[in-house]
Amino acid sequence: MDVNGVSAIVSGGASGLGLATAKNLLERGARVTIFDLNEDLGEALASELNCSFLKVDVTDGQSVESALETVLLEHGDVRVLVNCAGVATGQKTTSKGIAHSLEDFERTVKINLVGTFNCVRVVANQMALQETVNGEERGVIVNTASVAAFDGQVGQAAYSASKGGVAAMTLPLARDLASHGIRVMTIAPGIFKTPMLAGLPPQVQDSLAASIPFPSRLADPDEYAALVLHICENAMLNGETIRLDGAIRLAPR
Image 1: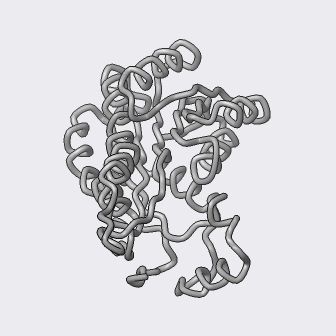
Image 2: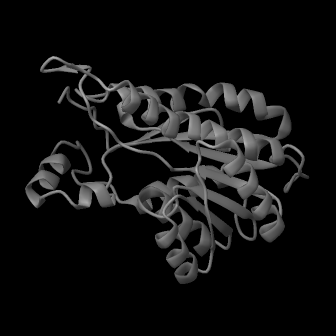
Image 3: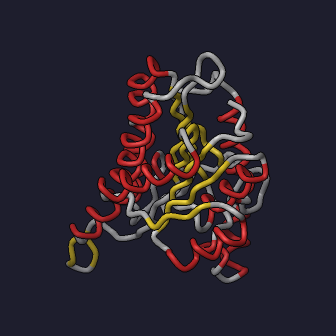
């Protein structure tokens, strides 16, 4: 699918991987709407990048449905959905006699997994009603998992479970939506230089970079965005999770 001129939604698009993706899509001519909870940052970016911003809680059905209605009015049929909204948490199952917070586990799964599915179900339902753009496709959906879905570290039970769920639903979603001409892919990023990691001390960043076989550096969010674009353009990519990680396999800790 050629993204030039199409309407695209990027959840979690106000920072990190989502922001890089929004910028890349805009550079290629897409009409981008950012879904995010950070209203101040989102509005500033909308003005700076000449895109749209909507304050959206991805875990709330009505919030996503209302936002989609606005997107349809402003930009027309949605052809691309990229889900980057998520949180990273760390907590052992039990530590010093204290059990893992059930509330924290549920919150992580609700944002990362349920939030992703919520956006998929609402947007895919609309995509299925649209005309095809090239005789065969109606839309492309790209979700974000993590390498922690496959080799989660100590303290990542909640995070790995949430991202593992995103990876696991990729194929059934693609099969569900195949008859509608909608593709579903997932990217499992490794260690990227997002705002969270950029705030770590240089020696910690260097240590993380050294753990990546090749290239031995922190990945750039633009590299994630480039893969999103390729997924959009390559019609045979469907129902698969791609590790984007420089061949890293996470150690236990």
